Amino acid sequence: MLTWTTRALPPLTAGRQRHTGVRLSDGRVALIGGRAGSAAPPSDGAAVVSLGDVTVLDLETGTLASWPGLASPREGALAWDLEGALVVTGGMAHTGMEPIEDETESYGYREDDGAARFPVQHESRRQPRSWGIGAANTRVGEHFVLSGGMCFDAGAFVYFSAVRRLDPQTLDWIACGALAIPRYLHGAAAVSATELLVTGGLRSDDDTESKLEELDATEIVELGGTTRRGPPLPFAAAEPLVATRRRARPGRRGLRRELPGSGGGVR
Image 1: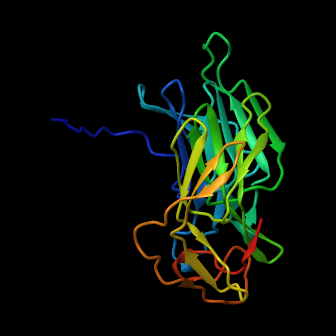
Image 2: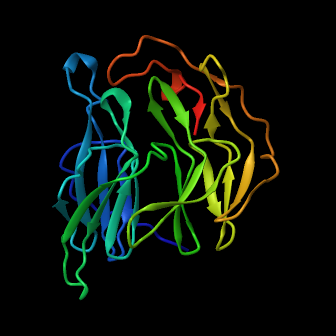
């Protein structure tokens, strides 16, 4: 029988939400970006901001260390550990909901002898617009794979069908397939060393750009090959989520259940 214990750890430098956590290969945990200020009552006048700090928690010593901040503060980012390099990509900047999915940042945190405990390199590089937020990140065989996603562009929400894998040497994202149905907030899992199963998710087909559809469609993507439809999920999709359209204000979109619903373009 398993016995669970709880132990105290140091608090973060500031409260936050929508940040990303990833376990590093040396056992530490990196906490990346996030959002601060949105939990305060409007009367407090607190500014809602996306955070750019990278904090590393050492579970053995119970201590926190600050790494160089992100070049682009972001919330909802994706992150991977490449056995000595922390890679951060995607996400959204809160102000105006600006997508920053075209910027990938990496931290090389170990020398060849494994002695270094802090970053020895921090690099930021631009990438083709590809995924924004809500993409699925999955380990498929030896590859780190991104699928789908959504961003806000030119007044509309845009949904992506691209499937890309990370080149660990160049940190470039290489096209290796495409979804038949563009989507975001979907599930994804490796079903073999070369195949990715994608299930459910959200997208909008409505020309008035006011509804989100919960998908029951499934697909299997063979990396570098074809995409084939799978059986639908064994339950009916819920009724479409209806957006409440309001005049856009910087940093806010009027929508029930905090789901973006204006815009139905696909990429």
